[in-house]
Each structure stands twice: as structure tokens, then as C-alpha cells.
Image (cartoon, helix red, strand yellow):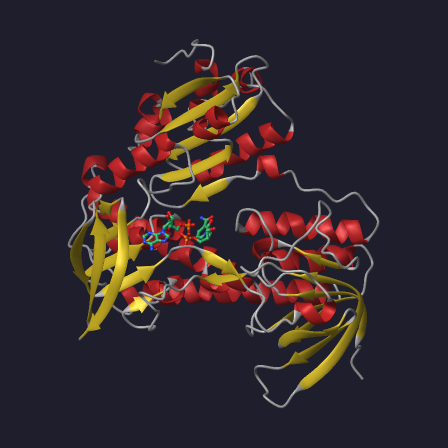
Length: 469
Ligand code: NAI
């Protein structure tokens, strides 16, 4: 007879949930992780971070070969792509990684329960199998972690139909390159998925209600990325508000408002990427007495604990950036807290990355946030154009911008656009973790020639002592 009572039940097998489950098992707890999707890894591994990065890699490889071979003295014949192969490569990467988590579960002696969980009371959940409609089981635990994630926000004026008006999930699996893809929302998903299809030849129009794309990031990043993406062929329409949509035969007609006037835009596919909402539908948190807000967000205290002492929540379902790595770190922290240790997440040092090409990465406050909070700051900026390695790569767009406290020199924010900045940002996150100053970065030896020298030079530029500009 399978076990039905545990030290900990984790609801949701995404990056938050599965990591929490593994860490808790390492700490000696008996753990069950309930997941309804039929595979572990959540949105990130199944229909988010991983498949999108697989497609971004394939399409960038194609794009680079197409546009940059000549300057490297490489002669290629007629270049083409095979979309079905790109998709099957993506799917096998996803399968390998989700299967890998199932393997880790076995190794850590974790119980993986396939099904949809709903609270019955503060210590009990009922799990209905999605695979076998009649299968139902009741499980109990001393502690719970709610890690049920989020789902794409649907607009009433442009509802998903899975065909012409779609979410990121369907945009990861188009069987043909759209002629004209209209993206609603100039955020992370819009620009990443827009990049995939633009590189394969789609005309991509981004409709953004605010006055700039990547509106939560530093203004200089938005400005630079607008310039770069427009050069790549994107049509970016900021200050443009969607008012309505009409699906015609294999076409969608959108009505948008610009400067008080209505305009019409027509495309064959519309990707709605206007954010995600916390997902607790059907979880019956009220039966456990857990407080959730109208928008589905579960309220937690500084220890990731809900108003019910033994029920915790992590990841997209609580406040903070909806990022896999934030959820993972919360997962580790909460497992340690339950085990009586001092689990902690430093929310000041969470990197944000946009996997366009060039990439975007940032940690800490934007310049506007510094201004708004009345902090006196100084800025150092250094372009990749003046970096030897970037010149050798043939990828010289972008810059590193460092904001440091004017009095203490402590790092406040680092914002980058450029080649491989998704990897360079790790150095910055560590610097934030150690409360480093700009001078600490400036005086650390960076290998030459590397892209990371741009960070060192930007840090030196804070005191106007950069060498190579
Ligand atoms: P987002 O919040 O990044 O961007 C949505 C954009 O849509 C905003 O700029 C907003 O002003 C705009 N918008 C909202 N309503 C609109 C309307 N009616 N008309 C025109 N524009 C409108 O949301 P996104 O891109 O959907 O991503 C969802 C979440 O997933 C984010 O929290 C993001 O951080 C996360 N994510 C992270 C990735 C990464 O770390 N690389 C990749 C993909 C998603």
C-alpha cells in the first residue's frame, strides 16, 4: 500500500516545487510532490524557459549563419531551415530534462503523485488523477508548500482560440512561420517569441500600451533594445492600446488606439503576452483557511509562510518577480525553514534576463527607481563596441551600465544589453550578494580578452577612470 501521510506535501512540480521537494528530502523529510501536468518541471521546462531557449538557439544559429558568415570568410550555399526538425529538437530537450527530474525524484526517494490537488482541510488534500479519471486519493501532511505557479493572462477583447489568437504555449509550436505575427505586450515573452519568428522570416509587430518596451527595466535598456530590434525588422508600436479583435478567415483584425485615434492592424497570428496571473483555481485554499487576494496571489510573510502556520507558498503564486530562479531559491529556503534552518532569499540580488539577441540582463534598481527613492547615485557606462572580444565575435551592440551609491560606492543596479550578458550577469549577482562596491568590481582581475571586461570597465567608468574609451 502506497504511503499517504508525509512530513511535507509540495503542490506543483515546477522549478519552485520540485526544487523544494528535493531539498526537503535531502534534509530528511518524507515528501510527496503533486503535479497535474503529466510531467515534472512546470511551465518553465514544459512550455516556457526551456523550449523557448531551444528555439531561440536554433533560430539565432540560423540567423547568424545567414547574416554573418560572409564577414567571417565562410562561404555557405543556399541556406534553409527545417521547422519540424527545430520543433522535434526542442521537444527532445524538454523530454530529456523533465525525465531527468523524475530520475532525481527517484534518487531522492521522493513520492511523485500525478494528479490535481485540492485542499480538504488544513492537513489534507484530495488528488484527482488527470490521466485516469476515476483515480482519486487522499493524502495528509504535517506541512504543505503551495507552488502552483501562474498561467497566461487572457484578454476579454482578444480571447485565446488556440489557433489565431494564442498564448506563448501555442507560439512555441506553430507548424508554419506566420507571415505577420502581432504581439500584444512588449515584455519578456513578446520580445523572445517575437525574435524566434522574426528570425525565421515573419514580420513582427509589437503592440505595447506603455510608452516603451521592457517597461519595468532601465530606460536606457528600453531605448537600446528598441533601436536594435527595429534594425532587426521588428515594428514596435509603443503607446498603442488594444481595443478589440475580430477573427476572420485565417486572419485577425485588431483595433488599437493611438493618440486618441483608432487604427486597424491585420495579421495572421496574434500572440497575447500581457503578463501572467497566479494560478490557484480549484486548489480550494479557503478550505485550508489560507488567505489569497482577488488576483490569486497567496499572501506570505518574510518566511514564505501563509497565515496558516504549516502551509507555505513560493514562486509565481506569491509576490515578487515571476522568475524560475526566484521560485527555485524560495523552494530551497522554505525547505530549510521547515527543517528549522535559516533559509533566506535575497530579493535585492535576483537577476532578470531577456534572451533576445543581443541579450538583456539586470540586477538591482533602475536609474528611475534610484531617482524616485531620492538616492544620490553615480553612473559608469561602457559599450561592447570598445571590447576586444566583442569585436572578435562580431557582436558589438549594447553596453554595461553600473549605478553606484554616490557616497558609499555600493552597487545599486547593473543593466546590460549585449552578447552573452545572460552569463555575465552571474558575476554581478554574486557582487550584489556580497554587498560589493563598484570599486570592488573595478579592482577584480578579469581575464583578457573577455566580454566580462566590459563590466570591469563600466565599474571603472563610475570614477571616470575607464581605460579603453
Ligand atoms: P510582462 O509583464 O513582461 O509584459 C507584458 C507587457 O504587456 C507590459 O509591458 C504591459 O504594459 C503590456 N500590456 C499589458 N496589457 C496590454 C494591452 N492591453 N495592450 C498592449 N500592451 C499591454 O509579461 P509577459 O511578457 O507576458 O511575461 C510574463 C511573465 O513571465 C513575466 O513576469 C516574465 O518575467 C516571465 N517570463 C520571464 C522570462 C525570462 O526570464 N526570460 C521569459 C518569459 C517569461
